[in-house]
Length: 164
Image (tube, rainbow, N blue to C red; front, side, top):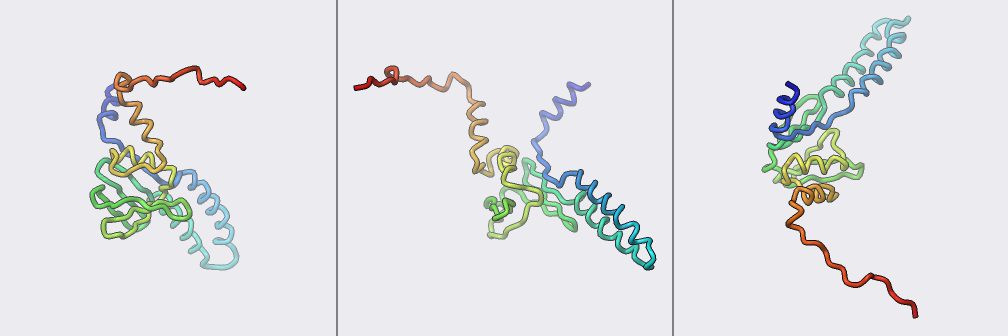
């Protein structure tokens, strides 16, 4: 049974999800605990302070970027946008190591939770449609080639030089 699930997962197209870690919800829970004495204190009508932790929780749960073989899916707090690989010109990196998708008309769209360290993963998921500027995936592609195709390198001499 477990082997069948593994085979199904291997046959599925690769998918990578970039999102804010769920441990951020712990900080939001701490914020709720800190807001509670103020919200139910002597000043009436401060229960509206719970709007901030609720909005933060929705932001953490909803915001993500999903890379599939078809393209990128960008989800923000209030919207969702699908970006097929064919509509992308490339990826741009901001000064703070954030990544933006550049469309064919030079429009830039921020990719939530995607950083420069994620570019090799995006390159692998896109099957080479987006190039990996770090070069990490180049060695993975070379490893896939059979060893017989590579010719062994010949070295001449021992490489040692005699002192004069």
